[in-house]
Image (tube, rainbow, N blue to C red; front, top):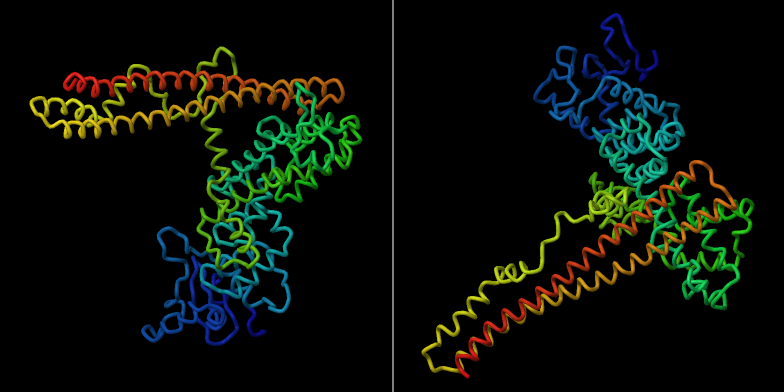
Length: 537
């Protein structure tokens, strides 16, 4: 029998796993007994190396089945639990591994080895099993399993690759959801939803490059960025009229496209591919190379080409924080990339996307417009006459001081002290009034912004209606695209309706605040100045 080759015996116990080497120790895992040379485990693991010292206090420890050392795990949460299959995989790997070349162990065995190598701190076994799993195409294709293990075992180099692959899928299947668990699966699905929402935003929403680089409906002029105009050498370009339609066709295909855009170069390559396809299907919507390159450079300067990559990158980095990765232990390239992007972690676009989607609900029927939820956690406070009362209640010291001044000095003859008290009170009142005007100006700015947003939304809605009519006439969409376009148009209508509701509400709120502030100003200042004028004039 060759030394070092594990064998199963039946003459002693069918659940005993023996090695022909000397200096054997006896271990148990679940219901199986392992008789192994201690050097096999100790030479690669500090914990097993220190285990030798147990015989100084317990000479019989591990000497036979009656004194076998259990390795099943002791933690109540089960995080250190070991199965006999896992331990047998580790032993087989340690005995049969040829360190100079890749061995033919299955992915299941390598996964078992990796888990125990991390749990018991076998650095060499961890490194080599990771290397072999990285080279195994069958394992790398199991993206859900790879991502779960990457987060559980803090394998930095696996996180981005597996997460991007999953977030690029239209949805997760049942097996992937079960493998990931609720938390990870939700994170992946949320990222995918944010990617699709971003692409829909490029297609229909504002601010977006489709608006900055579109033809004005009123003037029919090219509304490109100044850099593009300079590149073109003129204010207008013959291709300007075709660009809006081409952009919408390109974005329509991107919304349907699987995968994630992970860099500006990926985005450029994707746009180039779609443009080439559109050149054969809708040649009338094409633009010349000079115009196209100018637009691409403008989009790069505007950050549009990197937007989706930043979104996905922030989702990946969020996992590093969520699972407490130690970025000092990862490979140099991964850690360097992480540190260079760490400033983009907070706020996470995913969290922003989730919050917005959960707060704003679009009405589906015009009769339901009054029930639009605007994202407020509660109804805005009533203004009007109640505001004066609220302001006075919030600052009672100002009113009390104003009322006490004439009473304190009613019989006195110390005009300077009285005047000083009046100045002090008036200073407090004027401060509150100034703060009120700051709020009023902010409300007025919000009204102007909402007016502009509503105007832009109406323009976008009208442009998209015209685009859809033209598309129906020139290149009828597929049934799935037609359904998507219908949903987009409904979203456009709902967006206009919602902004109209918000504008009406904010306008009324601003007017109420202005009226109430004027009332407060008259009430508070006349109460002080009027009484003292009566006293001293």
